[in-house]
Amino acid sequence: MTAGSAPDTEMAQPVIPQVHQVSLSDGGVPKSAVLSAQVTRDGLVGDRQRNRKYHGGPDRAVCLFSLEVIDALRAEGHSIGPGSSGENLTLAGLDWSLIRPGDRLRIGEQVRLEMTSYTTPCRYNAQWFKDGDYERIAQETHPGWSRLYARVLHEGTVRPGDRVVVERMKQVG
Image (cartoon, rainbow, N blue to C red; front, side, top):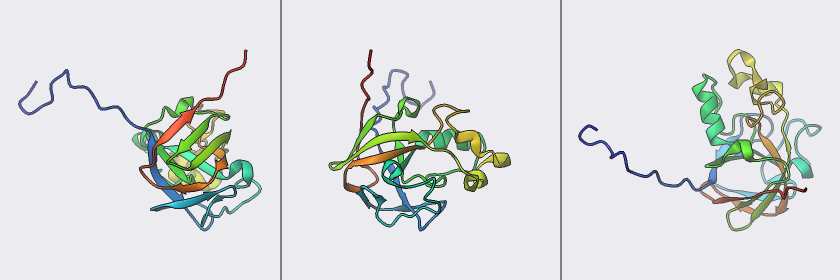
């Protein structure tokens, strides 16, 4: 150990899952960071989707992604960042590979979401990926690296720093 370095026995502080960034756009990607947003059953107020056939609606009201996955993608040389791939909420401190449809999230004091499906990446995300390989975030080919959609169970306001609590789907059998 060198002078000024931390002792080997120092314990890392536990990571509290939280909202890293809230993002909106007037349609398409990237979505831009905002200080807060009202979450309604139809999605985040002020957010719009370019193609409502594939995005939005009650079962796809909110799109979520992981800061840790984004950081890992950046380490691979992709230029993706929070909000780039169209997510409304970039979450930090979760084991993203364990989040799946059916799980519920409590966000802050008010918002409750139920994960409904993995997203299908579209060609507009190609700009963030080396060689345009936007399938890098497809659940079918890279499980645990996909964004997820959620329906809104309880409306409210979300802000960066809001605590996130996962309520796992009960396993049958």
